[in-house]
Length: 137
Image (cartoon, rainbow, N blue to C red; front, side):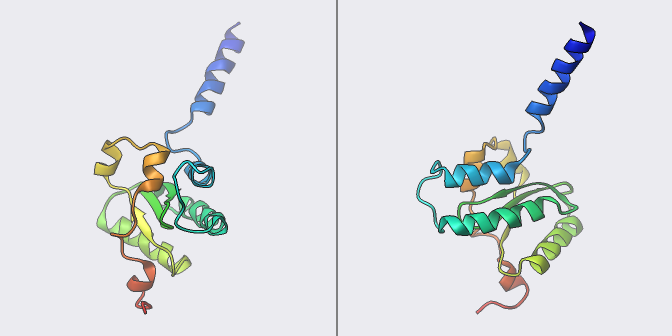
């Protein structure tokens, strides 16, 4: 009986997972499932953005990453310091010189982050990598 109870508790904790588990996949499904309204890019572009999101989520200072409706990548940093975020931005822009990274602030997080709210966050106030790297035209 104890073994069965322990298995159920372990299974429930795995299913529940962290609040931001698999956000790249969930944001892709939300966007392509039509739940975010009219998309700003063709569906194929979101499939490519998904790959960028997964790679971004694996970066050292990224706690979680999500695809944004406007084509940016939103990240929740592990460390919210200037050197840490600058390092993350540098790594991202070197890998994706045409990308845009939006850091999800503590203020954003206090609003309650559902996948619907996350994908609708705008990256227009974030500086695109091509501008940071000096390739803007």
